[in-house]
Image 1 (cartoon, helix red, strand yellow):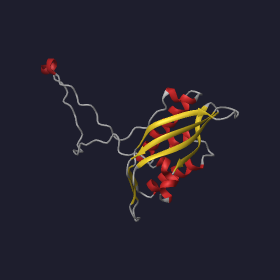
Image 2 (cartoon, rainbow, N blue to C red):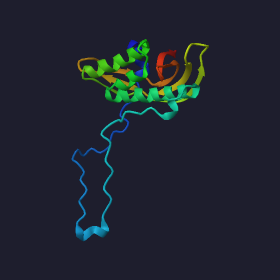
Image 3 (tube, one colour):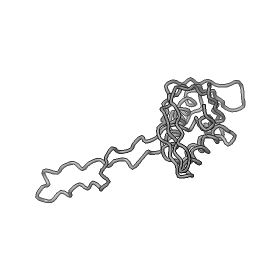
Image 4 (cartoon, rainbow, N blue to C red):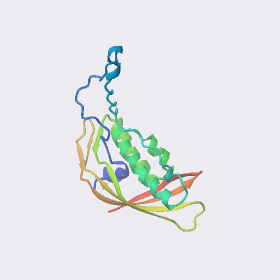
Length: 193
């Protein structure tokens, strides 16, 4: 596995969700009903999404038990997908402890790619299974969460650099999630190779 993929595997995930297949760039305007057609108005078309929407933390991920830790890690992967699709890593940063080195490495990979004018295509992650449990008797709540993640094939493009392709696959990640100041945060993650 390449150094880039290892450094950013937790954040080298999904893209292009929510993109429109509509190739016509002109705006769609529905006609305003006139008084003569008041009884026969047609519904206006639904707006097409402008791009991926940042996921919001689900209520079940806000607790302080193993079930909340599992939901939190599932949400983390959704945020990884969003960050890869947009280059916006602020949401990831909010979910990570400042001491999580793997987290920082993944974020840095995305920031550097987009900062150089590049893009990340594919690599969307889907958590296929998750299991969480409390770890030891540490002060505060600390949980271990093991997740199996299916990751699609990915292409990383940067101007002036060779295109990098990563095969997809299924990977097992071990997360440590802890409650810091009333919120769950990713303290560490490792991938089982």
